[in-house]
Image (cartoon, rainbow, N blue to C red; front, side, top):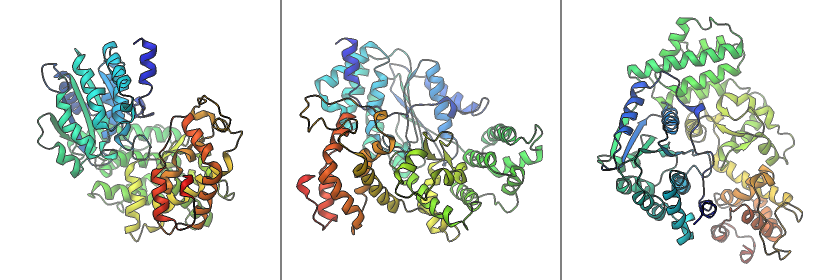
Length: 520
């Protein structure tokens, strides 16, 4: 099989876009030195005559595990030993479950040698179903067999970050039972929050090396002091506070209040960069009214609440906009840009996304460009807004019902599809025109909001429980009777086709109105 044919075959494997490492997310120089040195020594012990090994780095949310994972991936890349990296993210479709993990790793492995490339390509050619098979079926022919046939003579490191945001038992069994079958040159670096299900699989396994970050340990506190100095320098520059801001006492107090939690420092710093009177706000965060000694989760919740309390909750327009915009951000199946969020809400002309989001800017990322995806700062914020805020009398105004907003997005998506899919829409019409070829499309050929609606309207609908709102039923009836063929053409053109059986079952269970199941 020639190189062009191999490339075409490998392209059949789904690849998780955006799941790789980033130098912008790595640790600061001169931090995490002892821990990183232990990781390098572990990588250097890789030996083809030994067994593959897993390094499990755990700690509380916000301890800086992801920064370490980015650093490990970057150095391994620079030294030519990075086989693949995959950063799970519960907020991003394709990165919030393991469906694309092994196919992404396999495509990366194919770039390691001609032998691996050929072997993986031949496996796909001999069984096309492997491209979308379960990860248990994929591991043997796409990972294990090629690597056993063409073992590397150097370490091959796979970095997997935030396992707790995308694992299932099938993946845990592979990590426990299948990884040791790989050549001893393989090193798997994992990070995750302490989760009982994961610990149950990983505990007392010979090929697993556990390591935990103690956020109160001396070296961690020294590292966070360096990080605080760096962050406050950025605040001083952006806010034009002068080179001598803050004084040493204030910086020391910031370090004490941070209690080893990098996420707390990052969130406070982002807020100071965007607020008025940053010196006063920093002193408020460091005042005696801010308690110390709290669990990491409670400490972050209190910080999120303090930032949100500073918004204008007496402004009815803000309150409504907060619910709609933050609700859409949290319920979306993959992050949307400000422009797409506005377009999805085009039936609500009074809502201006660009006016609501700046008030929440220290809790969100992706705000420098209206076309960049907007995401929440950290998973702990998602859990605070959708779960814990409802349980606290002081925080109920911040609570977002993810279920309610997912239902709302179902209606918005169907509205976009019913209005936006037409005979002259790019990528549709070829079935009705009896064309023998499917036109190739990319994501850029249609608007972001239309693409999102095509990919995820069904995901949102399947989360709706009876009684189903009449507006949703009416929108679905219009879609099924007039737009479904166009929708199938779009998904086929971008290679994202979906099964309709789950929708048929949902209609039978949840809807008593007469929607023609035969048309679905």
